[in-house]
Length: 427
Image (cartoon, rainbow, N blue to C red; front, side, top):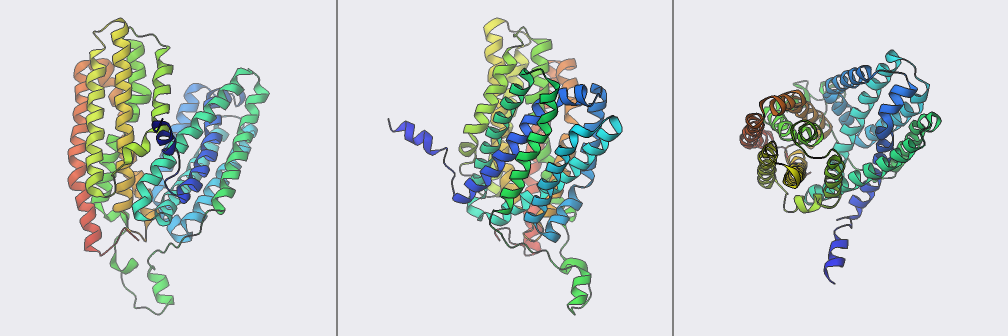
């Protein structure tokens, strides 16, 4: 009997602040998840695009987001993370309102680029605000709870999107962006109701001159995030480790369909398993992760799960029947374990390795490094697994092991950078 209250207790936010932030996560995710579920139908049937045009537009928009990552972070530092987050959420809502009125590829591309740029600024503001707001001891477990809420929101959104698709009515599909805009706008309003928190960037040369200070190197001689090579390398290796998502979303499903005798309906069970685990287990995976050392331990555990998934999955090329089904499912469970433990490590790295006066800029730099560590993986992993078979899976596993080894000296180098410049991430 005591196990039921204990299990229910894990659903409670670790702090009141985490609860308020999680409501924002749910609002955003329900809206975004609803539209994303039906987006392929919307863009092809309503806007009139081909699948190739949709893919190209999304890719180019991703490139734009990559380019503006660090400038967006600097904007968050300059005008304040919370304000940047609100502007990003409001801009996103405005873009969704316009979706039903676009026509043709040029309009779609322009909208996609603007939406990604606005999202990039909002995400940088959100990341910096959360670090500013939450006490150091609460950051990882609070973000784990918010991650659970985000996954719950996406699940509810996917259900709503599926319900809309069931009508098989273009008018219903055309209304979905407006529905999403309403929820994202409500999200933007909720962000304004969150507590205000101080955020200060070091003065630049012009501000020093206005204040009568002696002109000298900008930012009191403290280099920005792009000069913190250890942090960039840590973000890059973290991006490599986050390619567990490539296995989860692309490689394992393709492998199941093309290289095993497992029924395709198993894909629904796999993604359902991932969803349930990502709602209920993030806080368990994050337990005890509080600094660089424990983050590195969590990264190692993530790597073990990743390698286990590769080894288990490669065996299914030779198995048949229920054994194949069981092993594929086990491979999906282990790769989800890799996702959960890496998330905990990433939150700790961002908390412990960022200049407290430039958290927005560091959020942008983390996005930059992470993208470089991830962007090549879908094509390479798919080629390795499908074309090389067992050997390809072992190469994928080896790539992740190398990244796990590399993240240890890089994170320590980032830590020494902060110590050398007397920066205290606990502020």
